[in-house]
Length: 312
Length: 312
Image (cartoon, rainbow over all chains, first blue to last red; front, side, top):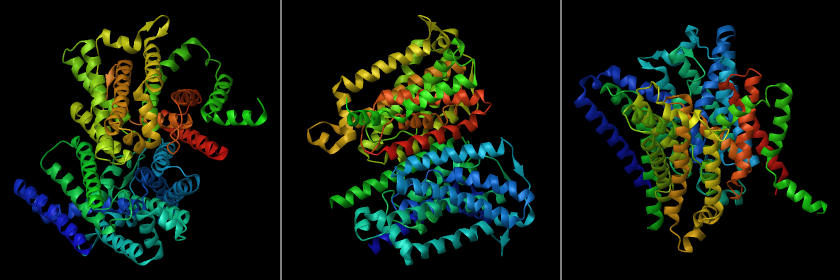
């Protein structure tokens, strides 16, 4: 088991090196320090949003609403940033995100609807609320202190990248060394067994979805701080790369297998690919196609591997 | 009929039917123009695309799946139709291309779900990116306007006093009904939704038929694309964005359920009708289209809660 995990890690590192080597040969500018930091910063945005989803996926759930929850909470945060103190605005944004997640969790745990239906509905609701609130306008130009989260540096390292590693460490500890984390894995690995062992499944599920909403809003803080503007549609193209990052990172969509560490590698691989496509001068129109295909391929590999394990 | 039987029959009526009655009354109060021939004509025109997609979604959901890619597939087929029309192809060829392309797209979904065994929402979500990407690449993000008169007849013409799209819709409804209730294939659809293992053990090629269900659903999307493109007299790569949500909502409020593999296309018709009337009513009240999604979402939640309250 342990050997397999190391093997998977090495394989992921190898993929990163291979992509980097190809891009480095084709485009020498790829190998500059600036571009390297650029890629890391891009992957940090993907990771921050994908982190909560990783927890949900580990419990054999899915949250399709993260992109739009990010947009909705970011819109309200942006509005409050203009008039209220920064801390209050951020807290309101995080609260909205957590609330959306809570609603998801309650509907899934208590009404018993499939997670993809509930969160898919939430995706459109959040989108609609964001549009209703913004009326197709853009809010831009945030205070300098707020810009620190997305555009600041500490010792030459972009703040989002530091946040990525910090959040990864925290979630790693939570997932591996707290009862909440172990229950997440238990529920994902074997729902019935977890239920019969007395795990309070509904409570854990609600916590997981709330966390996912909260972290989506947190990613929203970094995101709008980086681009220094917010509009209702910013969340639309975000879910596919996150799903790709998670599945490439080796977290199984059937739950119970994988971890938060893999998602960082997944996020870096996805950003490398997108960055590479940009450097090679491929039109951005190709991106949904490529990312969609990557999601399908990586999940297909995951599924085929699981089938192989079952038969041997 | 005694009270118990009556109660049982009452419970079988999906939420959509009550909602439809309520909405029709509400609309006739808020707008005196609602029952005019012109408005009803428009409703039929608007409703055609959604209803066709809702029927496609019904097939898929009856087979315990979901198709998140039907909206983008409509866009993609529309774009290919537009390109073929501008390339000088005639009406019959274009109709053929759209339907075959839709079927192929659906089959791709079905193959990934039935053969590779991806979770339906992942396969179709990935293909959402794939179809959107291909449509974007073909149009470079813009739209392709202006088609010959013969093609515009599909949405603009009328026959026997009815708008031509409504004739198409009636044809699709009849086709769908015969397919579901008077063919072996229809029986397999219910069988695969109820117990795929059993269908497999009887010696039916369940993997092929499951793929075929998505293929048929895709062909409906091809038909919807023809109507949509003809009505707008333009093809745009994002025109189908969100249609799948309305279609799925129609099916759910129409009483289809994943876990019980019950439900029928007539419920979905009522569901689609309510959503079209709801949007019409919201438009009369001056709610912009982008925000109407909140109304649809709220309606969806109400219907789901109603269904879960009445229990089984």
